[in-house]
Image 1 (cartoon, one colour):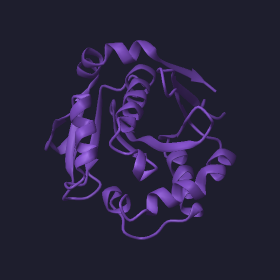
Image 2 (image 1 turned 60 degrees about the vertical axis):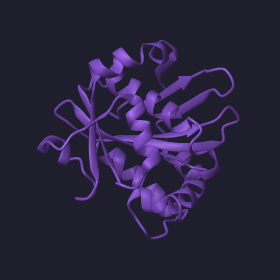
Image 3 (image 1 turned 135 degrees about the vertical axis):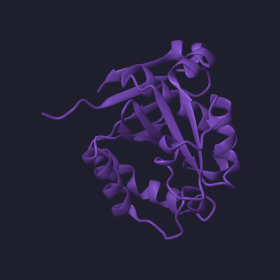
Image 4 (image 1 turned 30 degrees about the vertical axis):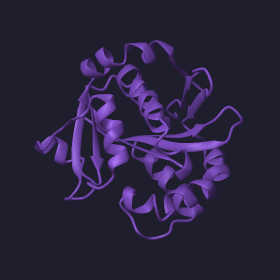
Length: 196
């Protein structure tokens, strides 16, 4: 039996967002756009890679998330256009790692990453009932660090946090459920999570 796939909606004024746990055909539909975003020379080093990726790599990435029991989401705008993606990976002992990308460089730094992060954290803490979520950040990725600071993350060099480090040089940060719920009660009341 397949596990359920989820969708997360946040109907804020101005730009409603939808995050879907995609089926294979939905990943294929957006794979070329995501590959271009992953490979953009401004994004790639912040994501921790230097090689160009193609649509097959994106499809393989999403298949690998699903095989591992992780949760990958495509983030779509009101017209169904791809705005980015995000995932919760390495779920173990009430914890996971969170990663995200705002696809278009021109759309970065305008609050979209924070909104995506809030949606996925609502899912992590309310639906998955995780206790902690970690982040592994390339040290010079100032924009991502700013998003995690806004969410209430703190630096964490514990062995548990370092287990989620994508690279030995990465910074690791953490937020717990109680802190997230205390700091973000208002958006939590607006974000909706449903089985697709």
